[in-house]
Length: 471
Image (cartoon, rainbow, N blue to C red; front, top):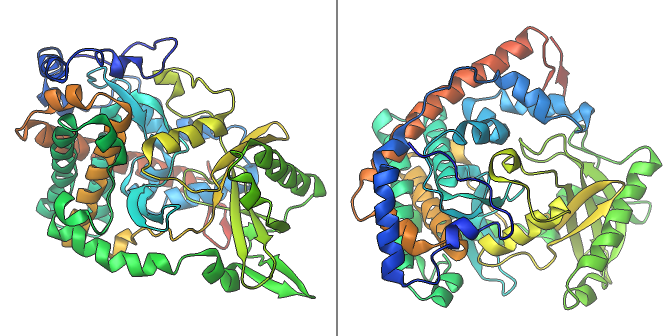
């Protein structure tokens, strides 16, 4: 059984592109030959190794250096369900995956490719596309890891929605099949055609099935309403003639002491300097009116994150909400090697631009008060499905979309021919991924139970969205 590839110095994707100078057919044969060293059936393997660290200990160690007052929110959100636990436990899963079979082919992985981290957003041309939308952990690594995390998350969502096992397995196998069939297609495409490939409403009928297309058509009208202009009445208000962000503790609150607010304002100033020159004139048309701390996500809770309200010529008609979010070292670094970027926010931004078909025009990075930060719009026609509201058919559609865009992301930065050669036209790999996901979903349920016990015994504090519960 092959383990993760050794860390290489220099080009972080060298393991995935080592044969790019050869012909496409030769690289595909090389991928097929990898099956002798790493059987596709071995991708089904998961059992906790002897001496596996306690998951609660791992959480506490990984949260060192975060904002301590916010960690109870993180643990409370993780305690809601096994899927909530998975969302906050990317570091735990990375350690576990580092001991599983790997082909050694590397791509720019999304790094946290669970199903909730995919959705609709707008391109700079105002088209709407479906893509991955969270890149805090992106780094060059094994392509299998993203797919294993996606399949596991689909099973956990299906379990939370009380789907029968057959429906849950269908969602997971659909994601794997969608990934494989799309990768086979990319293996025969020109590099530029692969780079420009995307999922929008015009292309979807040719790229995905009717379930996925139906889901897209339901979500696009909702996504069009998610802009800064539409968000202003809910997120901000006019007070004494000034536009201000609404306090909504503990999730949104104005910063104190003043040093924290200065750090956020400094981060925006540094961000301006790092913007590409062609984007800077657009940003400079806005003025910063207010900043506030904002709690986001599950895994991100505890990192330094703030919201900036920018205004154009008119306070009402041109609001712009920019989120400044701390970037820490990727949880995958101990297992795949250090990022080549000294600034982890730059790692996030460059990784996002590599993986996404089109990225936010305001995407950028900065450094302030000893921390790395990246900046993006809070809302830019972004929309993610409410997973607990999806029925079995819709979840299968979501799985198909996620598998397709994950294949596109990997084909952009890795060797599609070699990966396709390894995958092959049969469904053996798909079946193996589902078997792995079922085993790892059971592990996640057990880890989630340990977290709940830690909260119940007072080992960790828990918090709901509105109040802290300490037991």
